[in-house]
Length: 112
Figure 1 (cartoon, helix red, strand yellow):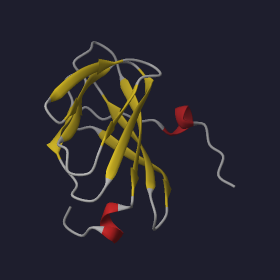
Figure 2: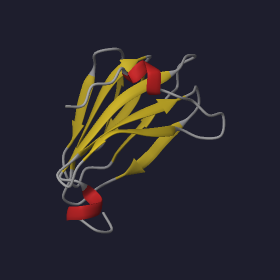
Figure 3: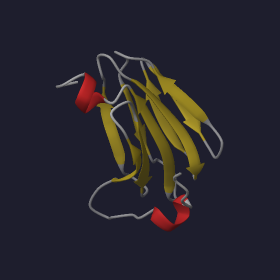
Figure 4: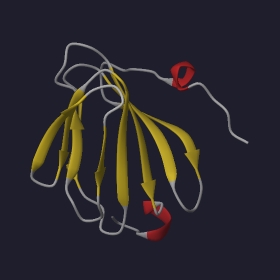
């Protein structure tokens, strides 16, 4: 059994968004993305993988396909396989996002 309080793991870096692995198996992964104001995960896509973003702290702008949506604590969105997606912290505070993806891209879809 895996039990952890994400707040003990969250960390930030002035240089770039931080990705912290919470869980990883050959089927999926779960990460924390920690973004300071002005940081982003640039738009990209995965051919065979669905990605879910769930906001734990703060607020930011999430891109899925051609749509941008502002989400705060408790908000979530899903980027289906093949859809461009990304996140931008355009707020004045820290942003912490739980991110899951399945199937695991590095195992099931090399180069995605």
